Amino acid sequence: MPLYEHVFLARQDASTQQVEELTAQMTGIVEQLGGKVVKMENWGVRSLTYRMNKNRKAHFVLLQHRWPFGGRRRDRAAGADQRRRDPLSHRSRR
Image 1: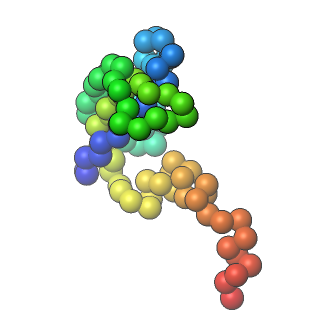
Image 2 (image 1 turned 60 degrees about the vertical axis):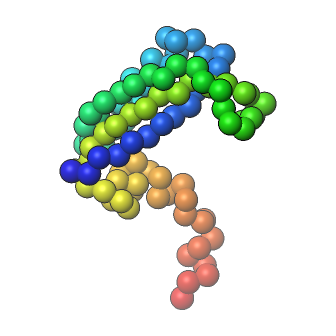
């Protein structure tokens, strides 16, 4: 099974408890879709290189996880494929 790493950011004004709840929610999503979380690291509040939505700092969390399948199949299971698709794309194809 391939190993994937995701670093997600939470707003600086979020409490530590809120960040832990968000991490538990992300872990639940990975496990619900058939993956396995190998490692989780909370890197704490760090400075951003560039401002994002007027924020200069954010909570950083690293998730390392394995999936029994990869690529488009994983994205389809997560629903990411549906969000990317253009709603008018079926009209342009013949």
